[in-house]
Structures are given as structure tokens and as C-alpha cells.
Image (tube, rainbow, N blue to C red):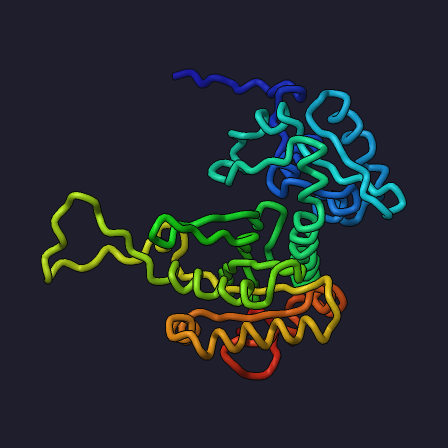
Amino acid sequence: MTTKTLQPTPSGLTPSPTEPLHHQLLAALAQHRMATTGQLLLLLRPKATRYVLSGPLKRLREQGLANYVVLPQSHRTRAWFLTPDGARLTRHWPALRGRPPYPITSATAASLRTPHTLTVLRTHLAFAADARRRGDEHGPWDWTPEVSHAIGDGERVTADAVLHYTAITGDERRKLRAFIEVDRATMSSERLAVKLIDYARLWTYQPQPVGRPRPHQNTPAPGPTWLRWYPIFPRILFILTAATRHVLDGRISDLKAMTAQHPHVATMARQVPLGAAVLEDLEAQSPTAPVWVPLAGGEPRPWTQL
């Protein structure tokens, strides 16, 4: 019996355990829609200097895969986004499979969506920095923007992002998920609070099969639709910014009032953690500081303890 000796693989053909930086940049822009150079650095290379990204970003622009707009009154800060060619190239990448295809593929669209999109990513970076400090797991691909779910009557609720986070304490790994709502005080306080009703509808929504007889009385119901994506209904976190502290406190009070007064929201709040915090507090102290107001009542606490 003879054995075949395995020949060493040429080094040029050995697959790398990590994606090249330019692939990571494309994936990050596909995932987050838009990012400034500084945000990309914090997201992908938090310990490096901007020089690390200048060459790859320049090449992506020369290849027609990415472009940028210059933010007004920002000392020429560049906000990057994918071109249509870049969006097509990344559409079926494994890290992005199943993600909502809402790319920003023109300078005009980028200018219209810049403030909100960059603020949502800014929120993600606060969680990512805290996770690195604590030794938890929350990376660039653990934050999915613009996740939409049906809630019946042809309507949908769209979260600004869904957060996936693994809190690690010794050998214990605690999986946490959250629907993220980033509020820049651009809508009325009442409209913001109504989002809680939409989430309460998602919490209970079970579509009725069309053209099929109703299940037998003893047949267990299939359960709400959110069970297709989440083992436990994600907590709901409101992050507020872009207004005075007095205005933000008032908007948080209105969220608390909706939680107390609306019967379906109040029922959901007994099982689903609901919290609100100010973005600047997350950045100055961290998301795991006691800066979150529980909407069902109680003292401020970390988001992990809502």
C-alpha cells in the first residue's frame, strides 16, 4: 500500500483567513450604505491611521466601484458610498446574503440620506467600541440597517437597524438582539412614539393563510412571524440626538407615556425590554453605562439590563 505525499500549496494560492481590506471596504459600504473615512477606519481598523485607507479607497474610486460626496461645513470630510457597479458586485457576497438591498448609488441620493445614515452608523460604532473594550462580540457585520417586517393590513415596520451582540462573562455567552430606532428629532414626538404600536403589532402578528381552512381547534397555532428570524423577540432601543437635552427628555417622556397608556404596548413591555438613551451619553460613557431609561419604568441602567 502506498501513500500519496501531499505537496505544499503554492503560497500565492493559499486562501487568506481574512478578507483583503478593499473587500472589507466594499462590504462595509454595502452593509451600512454610507460611511465617512473616519467611520470606516473605526469600523475596520480602529487602531490604524487614515493613511491605511487612503490608497484602497482611491483605487475603489478609480475602478468605478465607490464614490464620495464632501459633507458641508465639515473641513472637506468625505462620505463614501457604492456606485451601481459596486452594488452589483457585492450583492451576493456571503457576508451580505439576505441583507436588504437599499444601496446609495448616486451623489444626489447620498446628499439626501447623509445625516440619518451616518448617525445610524455612528450609533453602531458606539456599541462596537464598547464591545472591544469589554471583550464582547459585536463587529461590522453584526449591525443590519433598515430591516423591515410585515405587521398586517399591507403595512410594515422598518427598524433603522437590527443589532446582534454577544456578551461574554467567563465561559458564559449571552446572545442579545435589539431593534434600533435612531431619532434625530426630525419627526413629531407623537410619530416617534407610534413606532411602539408598530412593534407591538409585529410582536403579535400571525398572517392568516389565504384560501385554506382554519386550523382545527386542537391544532397549535404556528406562532408569530418574528419567530422565523429571532429565537426571542429583540429588545427595542430608541437612541435620540440632534436636539437640546430638554427636548430629548420630553421625547423620552412621550415614549414612556405610550408604553403606559397603549394596552398592546403595555402588554408587550411586560415581556420585551424597551429603553431609550441619548446618543451623546452612549459616546461619552458607553452603551453599558446606566444611561438607558426603561420605558416601562424604573431607574436608568445599562441596555443589557433593561
